[in-house]
Structures are given as structure tokens and as C-alpha cells.
Image: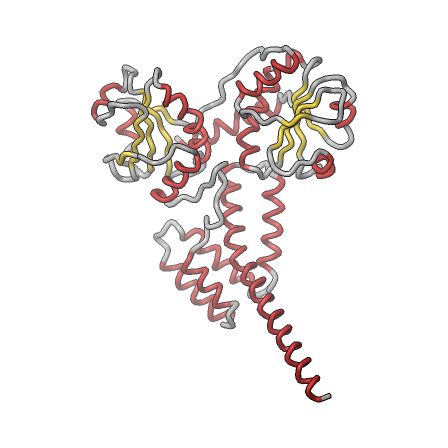
Length: 387
């Protein structure tokens, strides 16, 4: 189900890109299109690697389509401020995404600090230029809707499931809804996590709500993989709160925005062996220990990246600078963007592993530097004594 949803999201994104109404801005066309056009323009300054920018992207496309009927009166545009750094510097961009409104005459924009949902953005434009959005298209949801029939099929298998039991009239449920969508999107490429919802008052799920003892809304329950017994979730209701809970329970490594944290892909027992390598042990000896430890993890979920440690050690045997060079290469691919969520996750995990090697090299270099300083200092004192 999660894999299917990722393909749907990718397909929708591809269609949106093909018929995009968002104007791409560069240093060569910015002044003509924005400052001298006489057309009010709302501009997004973004970076391809930014998690929050990726979340805003489909909304931004939808916003542009909503006002495409009035493109001679208002423009929706974007700047890749990571690639076009001169524009970012020119308008004081310090974080991503940054949204700025230009009136089409002045080069002094107004910073947009309101909501980043379609409704808030549309209302802002309507207030500025007196135009209303022509249409509103619903974006595909990553939340899985469960019913009396599908609930038993989704619970107790190989997925960890977080379920929100809601009611259409419930104000707190409406408040939770956008956060729930965000959390679902954050975990869309994690095959072992499902973010779901049950309309407890729908005809096809009333029996389920009663069976689960749901009497207030929203009620949130966590069903671990392999278990049909739900645990009542009583934590905070921010994106960060939910991510921390799921990471702890499911062994995932998500941070707000959907990216992976710095631990994803790394293996603590192998990291300690990497430290031995830079502590003076011979490469061949440590490599042998790494292979032995990796084999012991064969049935563990970490095995795939344990194998990656083995590969790095093999490469280091023929090239001492392999880790740093490979890290630079993968960082370059990540910064360009355009990757599927699954591929981006894979590369991020690999860069996390490579960083363990590169950081140890940096630490070792710093230690040598300190030793040389001390030796120089001692020599200086001895020389003074001689004279």
C-alpha cells in the first residue's frame, strides 16, 4: 500500500511538472519578469534538498494552477536559491523555503509569514490583488483510510500502524488533520510504517470503533508489527512528537520534513571498529573484524548497511581517500534533487556511514596537529634554555 502510494505521488508530481504554471526565475530573467513587469509576484526561494521545500512544492504548483486564469495580473514563481546563490544573497535569503511578495514595481519585497497551506496562500493573494483562486484541486493523501473490512487486513502484519479514530464534526480532529497528512508523507517511503485513519461514524467503520472502545475523538492508537493489540497514544500532537514516538517504537529515523537523521544506516558495533582503525590498528585486521561482525548481523535489518561498511573497507585497501571522495560524490547527487524518496533515503544512509570514516580522519588530523603544536612549544622552551 505504501509503495503504491509512493508511485501515485510520483506520478502526480510528474504531471504537475509537465504542466507547471510556476515561473522559474534566474538572475538573467528576474528583473524583467518580477521587478519591471508591473505584475505582482509571489516568489518561493527554495533548495532542492530542503525537506520543507519538498513538502511545499505540490502546494506551490496547485497555487499557480489556481491563479493561472489571471496570469496577466498575478504571478507565482520560484528560485532555486541553492543554484542561483546571487539571487539568494541579493534578497537576504537565510533559510528555506522563504516566500516574498513583489508588487511588480519596487525591488523591496514583503516577506510572507502566514500559513503555507493552499487556503492561506490563496487568501493572501486575494487580499493583495483582489483576485480569487479559480479552482481548488485536492492533493493525493498519504493517509490510509481503514474500515471494518480493511482494518483486520492491515493490522498484525509486518507493518507498525498508527491509527487516528476521528469524527467529521470533531474540531480537534480537524486541527489534527493537516499534521496527520504531514506525518503520513514523512513516512511514505518507510515500508514498515503505516499512518492510517478511521472515520468512526462512517457506516463501514462504526463496528470497528466500538470494538476498539473508542468513545472520544480523536483517539490515537499504535499497533506494533505482528500485534493486533493497540496501545493508546497519549503524547503531544505536533509533527515532531509523532515522529519521535514512531522512531522509538519502529526503529525508524525520521526528522520533521521527512528526511533521515544522522544515525540512519549506521551500525554502532561497526562504528566502534572504525574508531579502532584510526586508533592505530592495521587496516587488514580491522577489515577482518568488520566482516565477521557483519556476518553476525545477517538476519538483522541493519545487514544491508553492515555490508556497506565491508565495501568501504575493501575500497580503502586500494585508496586511502575513498571515503572522502565518495562522500563528496553522493552529496553532489543529493544536492541536485530529482530523486525518488526511496533512492534519496538510500544515499542519505550511505553518506551517514561515510561520515563515520571522514569524521575519524578529521579527528585524527586534529590530534596530530595538537601533538605538533605541543612538540613545537616544548622545542621552543628547550631552545631558550640553551641560550
